[in-house]
Image 1 (tube, rainbow, N blue to C red):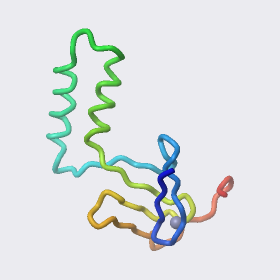
Image 2: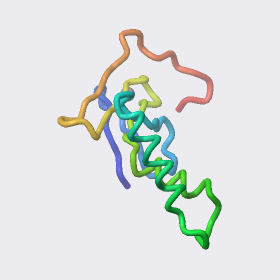
Image 3: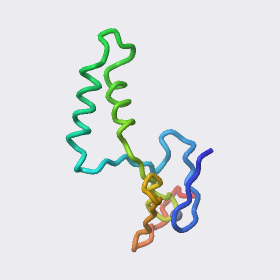
Image 4: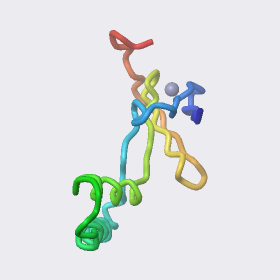
Length: 101
Ligand SMILES: [Zn+2]
């Protein structure tokens, strides 16, 4: 099962889909490319394609996404796709909430 560690050493388990604390991001400078890719995926979709249109859009988005993860314990953010991978700890620690383990 894939796992990450936040900058404070907490384990972030990536085995659930979607993983809790998983976020999608794209650089704003790539916005036009993102829109063009989605339009192309819809435009080029075979007329007899199986599955609903939202699956086509979802697949196109998934292929263009980069993900980051928020640690459920301390709120640190981990960007494993960056080179080198980066992690950021908030200057104000996350408050423990009811239901946290
Ligand atoms: Zn953490």
